[in-house]
Amino acid sequence: MNDTFLKACMGEKTGYTPVWIMRQAGRFLPEYRKIRAKVDFLTLCKTPELAAEVTMQPVDILGVDAAILFSDILIPIEKMGLKLKFYEKKGPKFSNPIRTQKDADKLKIINPDEDIPYVLETIRILRKGLNVPLIGFSGAPFTAATYMIEGGSSKNFLKTKRIIYNDPQLFTSLMEKITQTTIAYLTAKIKAGAQAVQLFDSWAGALSPNDYEAAAFPYAKKVIEALKPLGVPIIYFVNDCAGILSIAARAGSDVIGVDWRVDMAEAVKKVPITLTVQGNLDPCVLFSTKTHIKEMALDIIKKAKAARAHIFNLGHGVLPETPPENVKTLVEFVHEAGDI
Ligand code: 1CP
Image (cartoon, rainbow, N blue to C red; front, side, top):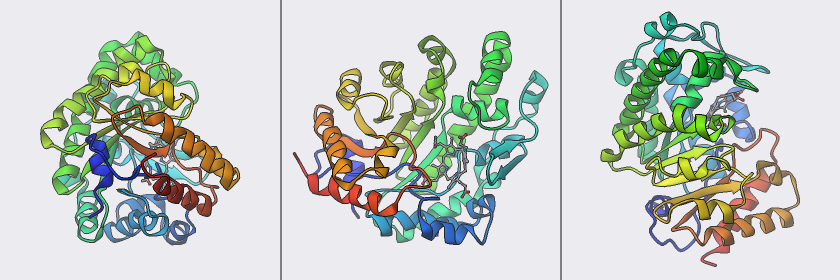
């Protein structure tokens, strides 16, 4: 098995920089769209043979150094008791969002074997066929909470922040339940065979540093601490992290994922040398020329040399319109750039 990715996670020296792409299993690949044309998104997530197939697509097509399980951060949330629907243009919607203490009290902490057997089965299928490590993932508790409170995607997260400021008891009890669910969910994924896990804190960057430290960080840290004894690398990705990176880096993860709004040289300075860094090409650069893509990738690789190790990735998910051949060029270039 190609274990370059796992070695880099733990800070070991590797001959080349390993690379995978957030949202690599998905809409930018025609091979994915072909399967999606036949089934809706949630059915795809819940059908192990199909979920395993789309997980493997980017490994075969792009030559990345890790696979990420095809699923969604909203799958465990649905099982806590929210009604989830995906709309083609509008994205995810929960029809019964959490607004009161009564709503939160009704939520349950999931039992993975009973509630998400298809996720665990997908992992087992994948581990038989994959020749690269398999990453399991979850939303970090704050990011999960935004969907549960807002009822879907949001711009200002006003409903979430209102609860943080005006009903701290409700916010705390909700976060505790999400944290327990996240721990149970990721523990089950690891036991089923996930060889690393990534916590996506996609919306934590919408918080001020003070609010991040009080309302998001402690819960991410709690999840990470609970998973540590299981012995697999833990990646903590915080989108829009520039203002909070030095706090996020204290959550206890092995790897810290950074978005593109922070220069890699600056990011490395804010992160202790005991962590590997992951990132951070702007996904839009993949719409530029091959020469420019290579130049920007090389700049990141050079700057990340100051970290204990580097896993190349985009700064957030690959966009659906991205030309696949440009992603392939990027992966090949990162591999060829070698040990500069
Ligand atoms: O039409 C389709 O096929 C659905 C599009 C799609 C896909 C392919 C969604 C809907 N989710 C996914 C897969 C997915 N989601 C993966 C697969 C594995 C991989 O990375 O290749 C992963 C890791 C996620 C995680 C996820 N879902 C996040 C965290 C990462 C990020 O991008 O910040 C978030 C925020 C979601 C919520 C979500 N899922 C889908 C949509 C449209 C949204 C809403 C995004 C938003 O609020 O703007």
